[in-house]
Length: 263
Image 1 (spheres, rainbow, N blue to C red):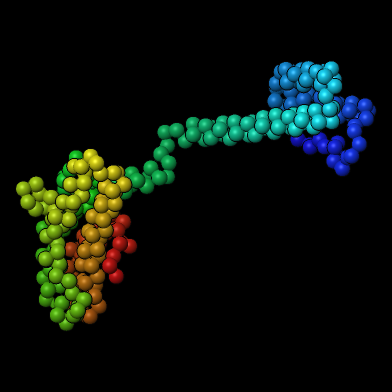
Image 2 (image 1 turned 90 degrees about the vertical axis):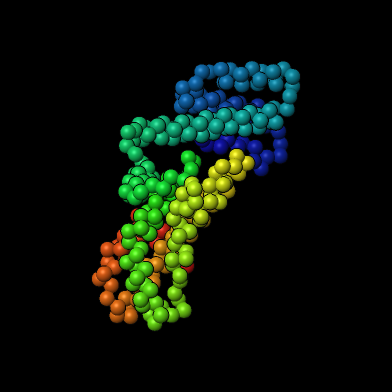
C-alpha cells in the first residue's frame, strides 16, 4: 500500500483544496481495501461520519486527517498480513493433506531404529523403562553369554604385551551390565529404576539418567572392540574371534553408540 503523506515539510494549515485532495486519497484507499479484501463499505461509512462530526465540531482538520491516514493504512496493512498468514496456513494444510498417510522423515528414521534394535532380546526391568535401554541391555546380556567368552580368552592371552597399561579388567566390569539379584536388574540400571519408581522425579531427571546408562554401556562395548583391534594390530590372528567381534560391533552400530567412547 502506498504511503499517503501530504503533511511532510509543511508549516501552514491545509487549504480547502488540499483537504479535499487528502479526502479523495483516503476514500480511494478505503475503496481499494473494500475491493481487494472483499469487505463491506462499513469502514468507509464510519470514516465519512467521523469527518462530518469533525467539521461540525470545528476540529483541527490537519490533525484529524493525519489520524485517519494512519488508521486506513493500519487497517489495510493488518488485513494484508492476515491474508498472508491465511494463505500460509492454507498451504500448510494442503501439504499436510498431501502427506496424509505417509510418515515423515523423522518417523521413518525412528521406525527403522526400532526395527533394528528389536532384533535383540529385551531385558524387561521396569514398565516405564526406555525401549532402547531394555533392548541395549538385553543385547549386552546375550553378548556376555554367547560371545564374550571367546573375546575374553583372546584378550586375556595377549593383554600382557599387546595392551600393557591400556588393559581394562572387563570381567570385573561386564557383570554390572548383566541381570543380577532377585529382580534381575543390572547394577548399572538400579538407580534408573529407582528414579522411575519415584513420582517426585521429573521426566528430565529420568531422561538424563537414561542417557547415562546408555553412555556407560557404550563405553565398555567400544573399549572391548578397541582392545581386540589393538591386539590384532600387533599381528595376532583374530580369525577365532571374528563372529564375536562382529556381534558386538553390530550392537554398537544398531544402537548408534559408536561415538560414545572413552578414547
